[in-house]
Length: 196
Image 1 (cartoon, rainbow, N blue to C red):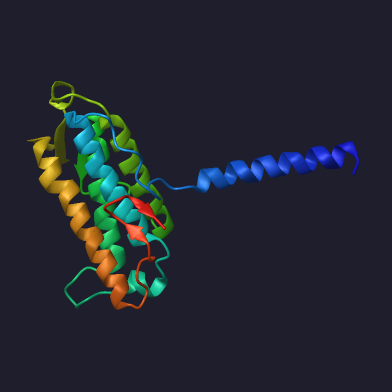
Image 2: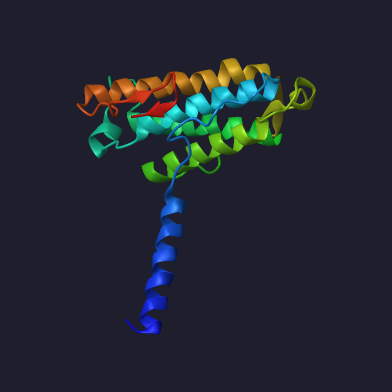
């Protein structure tokens, strides 16, 4: 192999490895737990638990799964994923102290994008809450703006609101896909946060 061929081979090998790493989504597993129970770490761990559940609930969904609707009046799996995306966006915006505009402005247009952006929103928020004390997070508020009217809620509402709601709806996705004959991968362990 001549020097140019070897250099080209190495270049493409490195680039393909880099591109593969860019395709890696967060929460395939839950990171090691923090060494303290600061307020920010507790919120971070709740978001990480949600992220792990969501990762595996959405891994390998098919078109049949996405179209599934348990009844005529219920949301489809895809519509449920859009809703979870909005919850994740609110979680992330709250970590940034940003306004959440309603109606939503920029919902991704396909399943792959919704999944990627939801997981990325959760990862960014979890990272921002990491190791923050109560005093450091106490000025984080959930801010909604609809038709130029702002409504503000304390951070407590993020726990019983968006985080809990997203966990609830992620459980629905698991149930829906079981109904369509495509259960989540065996070995997903939400208690440990690792998958065999």
